[in-house]
Length: 540
Ligand code: DQQ
Image (tube, rainbow, N blue to C red):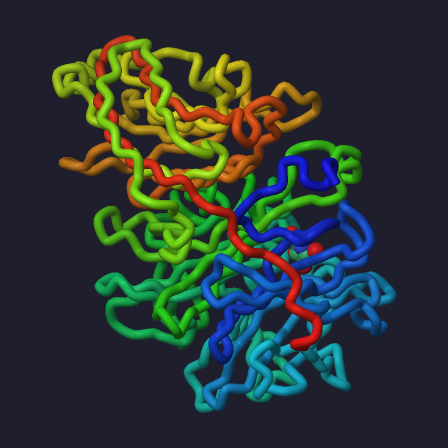
């Protein structure tokens, strides 16, 4: 079906058809990674929310399984909404999720696998006394959702978890305690609140190590640990995070930098990316982040093509020891198993205002590592040179020239550059008078189709002394995930090429700066498609 296959991705997870949104309850069990997801079985737009279910051995190749949970009880008849898994020390799996009741009240429900010895966890039982938690006094019945993975509290046998909400216009993470996951008590106070940020959806809260390069289990605490709080802001559909300190006894989390607080400072991803969720992967001792990449076209276009949304490639998340302010997000290493053969390796000198085609196979499916060395003398001149206050989103995109930018790569372009998506650095003068680097992705010319999102995404990214400007890009037909400086700043692009498709896609490097030459060193791998298919029915 040409319509259905149009612009589908080759190695991102997406259902065969219809609507998907948030990743739910990711976990690892008996050799399989499990992904659940918000799914509409009936249409390519949001509704009838059901839990889709898929499993993988490597987070790349997936098998679709039957639905895990459908809206069939009074307490979730209007939707089996987002939830998270907690794995207890005895191996029991606890799934807490939000149900939208017959009265449109948001309540928290418990479910668990019928048979833990089943590696595929095919059957899910909803607890007979659901709901286990209803909106407390003072909290709106439509503002209480998305329970997260629980962690152990200060008292013996005590578990804590947060649920997102808002009080007035203040976004909050409420905290509950439980010892049995069937009865819960809301604690006084909140884990954290940020005025003006509105409803917090899909809160996430987890420890990161400031010393080691492995991820930490959710209950891990102690010296050398900081805690990340993430909120998905319903008002602007952005995922914001901050790094801070968690006081377990006082049930309080405090951001290290108030100016980088949730909803104010850093975003997990400056592109099309929302409702993300992490889980601890005990197999490889890492924390893995999933995120929902939504559509930026119209609902009618989605209905026509018959599907909507993909999941990001899972990313490992680490604390960035060098900056102390940022997380590092990086595609899980298993993605490298899709690389075909040896990479194309090129070094290209780019004079001001130049562009060069890089010949590669299958430019619609690539893994690219690129680093750029900017002419040192030109870089010194920045102090007098370029304007203060540059921002990707208000700039004119890659066509607007400055003295020290933009330079980078152009992906999903056709031969004549009538469609193109540039991903690039732009160096300007920061408020402190020093060079400030921005990392941007320009969608303005990504598609000749009408009615699709065409913003310039991006943000500043720390580039430390001695570091080159470096980026990694995963290109997959209509999705580009771009990581700068080892994953300090990330941008996901959802694009709708009409000409730069399949074999017609081309890759370029460019330097549109007026005042500096740039040397680009690139390594490019073609990626093969992931195997994403239904689980063979006879084996179920
Ligand atoms: N999506 C779910 C909610 C959540 C929202 C409903 C975030 O539980 O708050 O599909 O995208």
